[in-house]
Length: 456
Ligand SMILES: *Cc1c(COP(=O)(O)O)cnc(C)c1O
Image 1: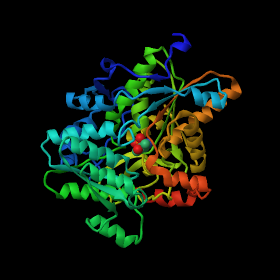
Image 2: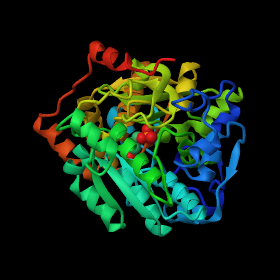
Image 3: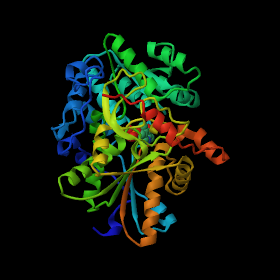
Image 4: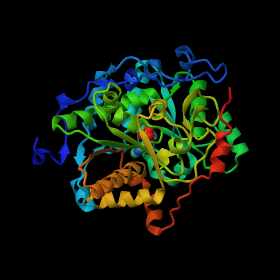
């Protein structure tokens, strides 16, 4: 197809939308390691997970073999309200950089939650409703997941209790209000409402919280209330499965115009957007049909892949969740205040961890101010104000495009623009005022928290 026939925004037709999620585990030779029971160290069985998670989601979590899961019609219909999301050629950014590279981004910020998280929130709420539950509990860091889940729960008329990391709760009152608009209750974490919250507060007075703390609280509430389960917005296999809709749409849009990407880039917090974006491409790679460079971008302040250890660890601070094998900084690691709240988790998806360990993908970490430089450069030419999380991917997309400028290579780069940054203006303000810092943990700090990994 000639270059000038490729539109600025590639939208799929409704009948081209994916009707099944793709499970990349089916094509992995080395499967991700199973979740372990923290007491017995045996793989968690479905019955053991049932008090915490919804039944259907447990099946998806444990299934390493089924390649495609049909998307239920109710979820497909909901997707149609805001999907397909556009795949946009960043012509203006390319021009500004003077690069021969072709840059595309898949934009997931076109819904009220402002991020890709709604893709999994609606699926999880659907299965909770189908099971006849009253409601769900969850944690939220930056607030995107809590917002997405609140939207999904109000759609299916489910109660939604959100534990929001205290620092975000205080910094982002408007996110909290969006959640309440959708009927969710929002509690700053750690809180006095749970045993684990009281314990964490006693041990660390004045703490501003972390995702790991908030998860422990949300799990405690879910397991102590009749008719409630806990849901999680990233990290888990089921979440990557739902997010595969991003990658499937991207691949269909590229295929439609005969475009072959060379490099696929995504920011990585718990791994859900990157896992979803890269999954059909990784599938081809695993089956030996094509090859791509796939790059995870993480903040230098919370570098799970680039400075973490691949080991079994707790998913939460309270150590109530199953053990997961992943690249981790230790469940006690509390990253310094970094504005990319969605990238502050101490661990990483088991699927991505295994793929990274097998050398099938790369990872880089980037400091915060360099990320905001990229965010601003992008915002000024592409007309979207990006989320700080997404801007990690922009940073590396720009860096790769600038390498092409040096070598003259016309590489095709695809990155995930996971969301918008309207609720993150305090971070932008600090960047503009020059008060943003680039704290990077020392080797000693990381060694200290990694030394506390469970040993067995
Ligand atoms: C949550 C979030 C992320 C990071 O989470 P992943 O699970 O790694 O995708 C990235 N971008 C935005 C906008 C988010 O809300």
